[in-house]
Image 1 (cartoon, rainbow, N blue to C red):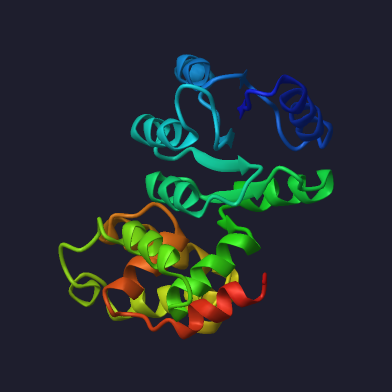
Image 2 (cartoon, one colour):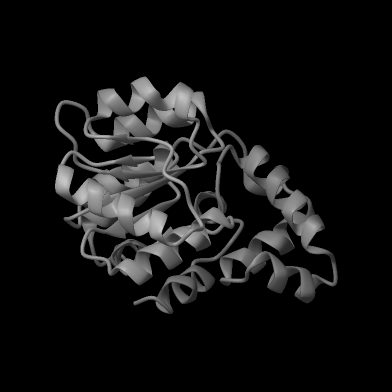
Amino acid sequence: MVVEDYELLREGLVLMVERTGDFQVVAQAGSAEEALEVLDQARPDMILLDLVLPQMSGVEVCRQVMQRFPETRVVLLTGKEDLPSILEAVQAGACAYLPKDIGPGELVDSLRRIHQGGDLLEAFLGKRLLEALTGDSASSVDGLSALSAPSRPQPASALLSAREVQVLRGIQEGGSNRVVAEKLSISEFTVANHLKNIFRKLGVHDRTRAVLVAMDRGLLTSLPLLAWFGSSL
């Protein structure tokens, strides 16, 4: 589903996505209210969601989508680098951020990666998280604290098994499920099962938040995460 209040841009996005033959646009909406109204009937696997919408923010739309359909992949689309809003949306359940000036080919490639289970936080967000981790930006630190604060009931070490920590560390270092499986000499299916258990135990929905929460609880150091985002800076 494509949710964008600017009609010309929305129609262009629909056209670009459907031209690939990989995706079918099951619904489109020009407002948050319209998107939530058609959500139950459309049941999209993925939502390309404008972060800035009239009357109701994309963050609130994302939050309501996650409450009703937590398996839906919400991809933020925004024309400005608004770190607090993006981090708030990530905390609400968004799995990716894409700038509105992205090229058609890059857009489609990104959507393919996301649909296959990847998380995509573009270079801008990686840079701001880097600033937060190195203490270069007070506002970024506040945003990062807000992102990880809800998940503090128990230390991660009391929740995760040794193997789950190994899997999470492999993800932190930027490895795909296949790379982690090869490194640990286990199957991709086993890695996926471990990730599912990690998400449940840490109270998160994706790899990015799992790493951030584990770092916040002291289980993982920050250096691998810096390297993880460094490749996109």
